[in-house]
Amino acid sequence: MTPPESATHLYIAATDGVATDPANTSSGALAAFHDLAPGLEDLAERSDFCAGSTLTRPRPSPCLRIIAAGLLVLTDEDSALCVTVADQGSPIPSRATSGVWLNGGSILEIPAARVVEGYGASVALAVLERAAALAQAAAQSELVCVVRHTATRRLSRWLSQIFRQTDTVTLSQADLARLTGLQRTSVCQAMATIQGDGAVKVARGKITLRDAGVLSRLACDCGGRACASEPRLLTG
Image 1: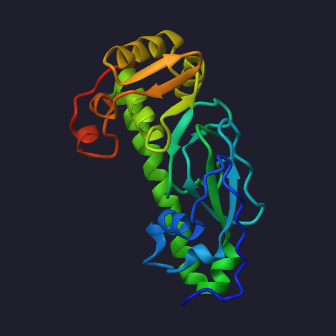
Image 2: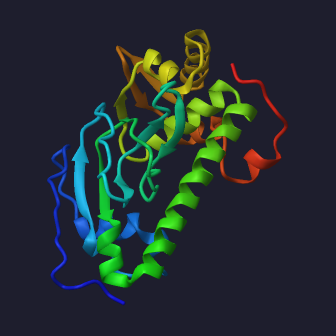
């Protein structure tokens, strides 16, 4: 069933001033749900955020929240440690209320009631269940990364994700230590290795990409075969 033509579209201009096609961005972000609810993006409201801003609290009623653009570090509200790094197409867990945008980004939010109205209760339930499963898998992947990979590999993977969308990010080593839960000395040593290999340049709280290929070779491949098969490495 397709959503009603009267569905509301609410899009806010991108914070970086770069014009984008909301329809294309929305379709890509919701690709994981196209088989269940084609046209789901027509029910979405979009909110944009600048780098460094925090995740907003969800609606009091159940809703589907998906990253449309940017990179969001979801953190545990009590410990402030990273739960997962979410990019385009990543569902935000329904209870997640804590997070930091590493660069400018957007969220698509679809109240569950709209999905029920447009597609029926059974489809709405299937959409929400898939979103929860995807969010859980992402959190488990990040936990495996914490256990198995060195600080250098973890931070290289984070930076690789960031640099898919920008060449420079304002992010201090203190920020990285706070978000990853690593000691500041571990982060400094890891970033020295990454910079020494020519992957990035670090200066005055900014990290600039120099060689994406080198950075990719340094990064872990969480969620893929490498993460599942590599021997355990101590983080630090």
